[in-house]
Each structure stands twice: as structure tokens, then as C-alpha cells.
Image 1 (cartoon, rainbow, N blue to C red):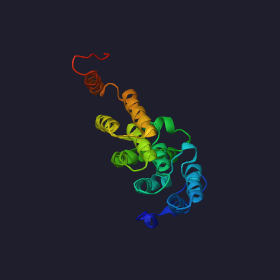
Image 2: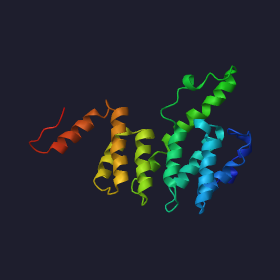
Image 3: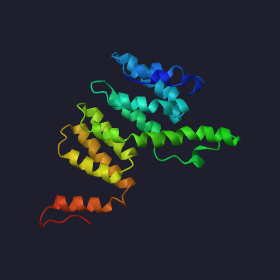
Image 4: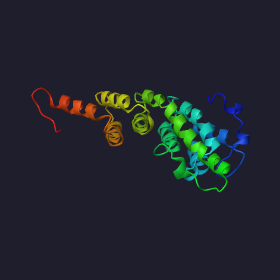
Length: 215
């Protein structure tokens, strides 16, 4: 579990409250604890320090592979929260350095502040196929979280749309079904033009032979 976590040079990284993020491995291990209280403390620590108020640090980026590993561990409680944390770390959209930057007069310092945001977005998207596997997870909350994550960060919206639509026919949990519907709606809002023909095809299919669908 968490293979390679001790090989990361956490001491040379920082987060909101320190320039030496040596506490991060314990937070990650805490997310995998059998004790619900320890898991809560670890998640609070991730949001309170490693991802403080939405900020992303080099230590935050270093956490991403381990968070994906934890999210895939069947039987581990609270994995839906880990999926949510990964989406939060990625950010609402592809980061714009000009929007994020400008806090520091020194250009190198400003670039160093911006870089983790850009790297986090890219890394979560790079690993986003992992969320596809979670759509059939035994935990309904994980399935629901995965649907939202796919609509949020996966780089292939057409593929995600098809997968979510297929999942609708086999999903029986009401919360996961709502999440699937919301994720499909999110794809329509974010990628309406490129996905337009797919949506029109679905409406025609739903209408059936001789039926009609709204344009």
C-alpha cells in the first residue's frame, strides 16, 4: 500500500503551514486507517494544509498518485471523499497562469507558485481513466463520485458520455443514478458543441421508431 511513499523527498516540499512537508505521508496513511476518526483527521489535514483553501503546492502534486491508489482500494471506507479531493486538487477548469499568477513581483517566484496548479490539473487528467473503473465499484458513493469526476476532468468527453450512458442501464442505486444524470448534464454544458451529434442521436434513439424528439 502506498508504494514508494517513503522514497518521495517530502522534506524539500511545502504546504500551507510548513516548508518541509514531512507530515504528509502520515496524512496519506491516515486516509487508509481502520479508525473513522483518524480518517476524518487525515482528510481535514489534507484540506487544511496540503490543499489549503484550494491552493496547490508541490506536496499536493506529489500526493496525487497515492490518492489514486487509495481511491482504487476496494473495501477502504470513505473513498468517495478521496475522489472528491482529487477533483478539488485538479481545479474547476484548466488553470490559466495569468489568472492564478501575479501574487509575487519576482517572476520566478510567481512561476513557482503557479506551476503546481498546472501540474495538478495535468496529472489528474492523465490518471483519469482510473475513474472509469470506479463506475462499477461495490460502493455506490464511490460510483457516484466517479461519475462526477469523469465529467469534470477526463480528457475524452465523448468516451465518457458513452460510458456514462451505458452505466445508466445497469445502475440501481438512486444516488448513483442521480450522479450519472448530473454528470451527463455537465458534459452537455461543458462540451455541448462537440457532443451535439451524440446527444441528438440519443434523443432519436429514446424517441423510438416513428417517434419524435425535440430538436
